Image (cartoon, rainbow, N blue to C red):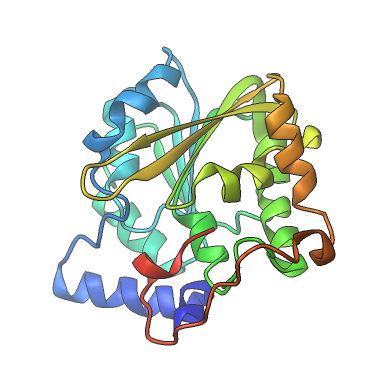
Length: 242
């Protein structure tokens, strides 16, 4: 069942149902105010922003209120983008585009801040063992991160919000070719989420580099790592651990 979160048809159907029922959609990882203090560190006057996999979240609207303008929000679901464009038809300096995060249709250095909340998690939803991520998923995530790095300005920042703790997720971010540093904060009360900040032009620490190298080690090197068992009835919130 978890694989449906990677399917365009699932999201189109979900957004169309939300629109029919006049619901605002679910806010994964809590409300913006739960992590706003971490995002505000990166905001400057005239910050140009991009939201990846915007869905029907209020995140774009909240960032626009913070002064992130112009602000572009993308999603690969046409139904989602149509709904969000209609909701915000009279909002200046905010645009909505159907686009695949693997192939961003923007020139190099277009944005000062790129942010995603759960988009990478949805792409990884089929992975059951966070120690042994499949090559297909590694390649998929790398395509997205390479595109993010490309469209960031030289002093730009990428923020990624996820369930995944540093020993699993940092290794995806900590690759020299992206030309950024990696830091991690957590937030939440009963359940903690992780907000990663990648600053373009920054340096990776020795720990980051080691984690980055570990992503490409053979499974033989990880033979003593624990194996996670599959569970067909797990939902998205319980399923994402990488």
